[in-house]
Length: 214
Image (cartoon, rainbow, N blue to C red; front, side, top):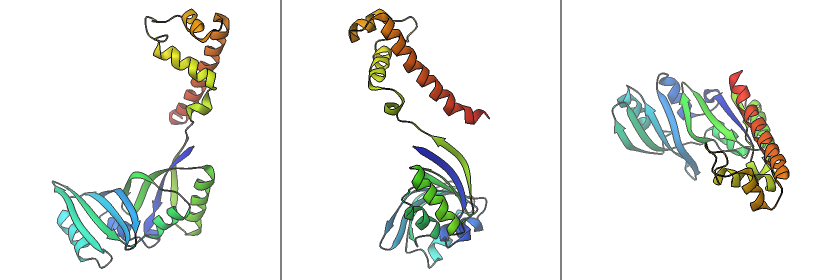
């Protein structure tokens, strides 16, 4: 299933938290979790800032904040539990059937987060962003593969047994002949089976690391 990490400018639409972060451009916000409620969006937000007092006053005095509670306050970090209006940026994400992976980073009005979903859902989301005129950048794109899709059942069973019985240990704790006997196949068939499984695993590994090295 594909994953994209993207960065979007939520100040381009109605988003109270993004607007606050733009007023504190050097402050790092992390949305640790959130959920929609009948009153809006209930979230827990961590902020690392030298201006804690001024920031807390923003949450205390803003009419947009429907509830507000300090759950942690130490050094330059404050964690706030609050209910605020559902933002246009968040509504766009939800309407496409997606949810972000937490924590969601926010700084100077820009949210950065990862979404893992089907190609269709991700395509719908980027189309929704374009329709809503929300500027965004895709920072990275990766494709994960289920091991059950990578290997056949027989290959998966054989290579799992090889690992568990110490075939890949140094020194080896199990021989190919012993693996062959446990699966009731000859050594030649075992060798081909193992080589094909290893070939698929190695190719998948190279495919995954190649983009990071470019």
